[in-house]
Length: 143
Image 1 (cartoon, one colour):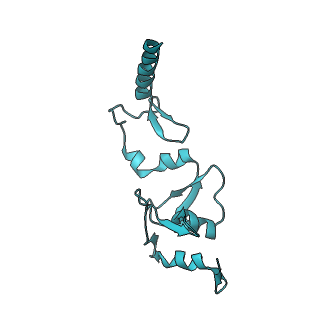
Image 2 (cartoon, rainbow, N blue to C red):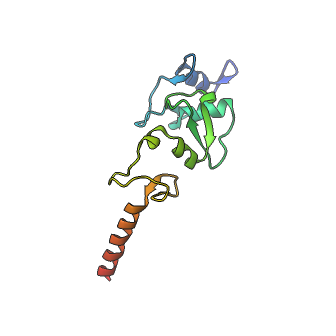
Image 3 (cartoon, helix red, strand yellow):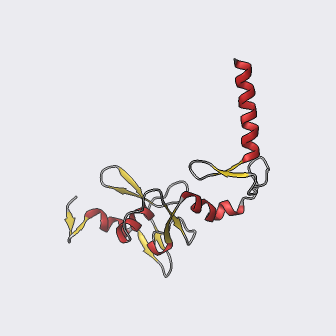
């Protein structure tokens, strides 16, 4: 893209979509269904707005880490409100995850009854055991 006043064209488009309040820098353009800002960068390439802001001001997000919104506002792109953390830590800190104390089938999320899957999502051990039992019995009948 051609630079405008020494900056890439996308940069001025990006910052024009940010409303800098006293605390948060709120994304005013399109958002994902989960509420995160989206920015169409270059030809047909969509990026998450908070990631773009962080990488432009702070630098690259380290491999294996993701950004946690410390302010808990998903439209916020203020790099001071973003911290690079592991998936496990982001889930642990998550406001919604902290409020949910039981799995969808009603089993309590206790340290003994909770495991994290490979993507860092919290899973109920009781439900997983039940699922495995049904899967094994179905497999045995099919053989």
